[in-house]
Figure 1: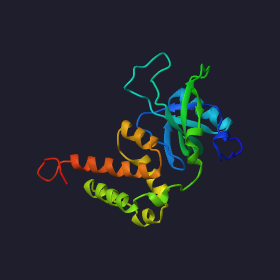
Figure 2 (figure 1 turned 90 degrees about the horizontal axis):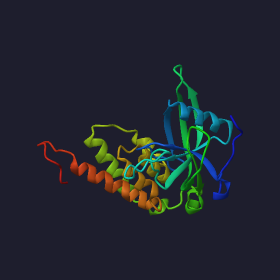
Figure 3 (figure 1 turned 30 degrees about the vertical axis):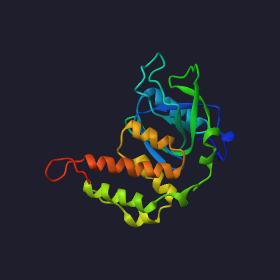
Figure 4 (figure 1 turned 90 degrees about the vertical axis):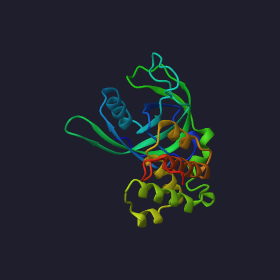
Length: 224
C-alpha cells in the first residue's frame, strides 16, 4: 500500500479521482462504509487506489435520469473515502472499508482509459467537513436517541446502548445515517444536508415517517 497521507483542507484533495457509483450506499466524513467488491472493473479500481493515495469517491446513480454511454447519470454530490481496511477472499473478492474524508461536488466526468469512471471533483463547497465535531452542540441528541429506540423496538432489534451513549454526537449522527435502511433519495438527502443539525433532524423525521407507515397490531398503518 502507498504511504499514509492526511487530508486537512480542500486543497489536499486530488482534482481527479475514481468514482464508485452504488445506489443506496452512503459515506460521510469520518464514518465507515464496508464494501464487498467483486466486479472486475472495481477490483481494478481498488488495485489502482491501493497503489496510489487509497481514495475513492462514493456517489449514487441518479436513477431519475436516463443512462448514457458512460453508464448511469451521477448525483452531483458524493463523498471521498480512504481505504482503511482491505482483505482478499479465496474466491477473488475484495472486502474493503472506506473511511469518509469529506463530501465533494462532481464537477465533470473525465474521458478515462480505465474500465472504471473518473471524475473531477471540488471539495471547497464542503470545507467544513474537515473540522471534526462542528455543530454537535446544536443537535437534539435526545430526539435522535428517541427515534433510534423507537426504530429498534418496532423492528424487534437490540443495540449496544452503552456504546451508543458514549459515542460522540457527530459519530452517532453520521454512523446512524450510513447504517440506515432507507432508500437512495433519503440517503442522498442525508448526504447533502447543510450541517450536522440538519442531518440529525432529517434522520429523525425520516425515521418517524417510516414508523408511521408500519402496520400496527391491527394491520393498519400506525398514526402515532
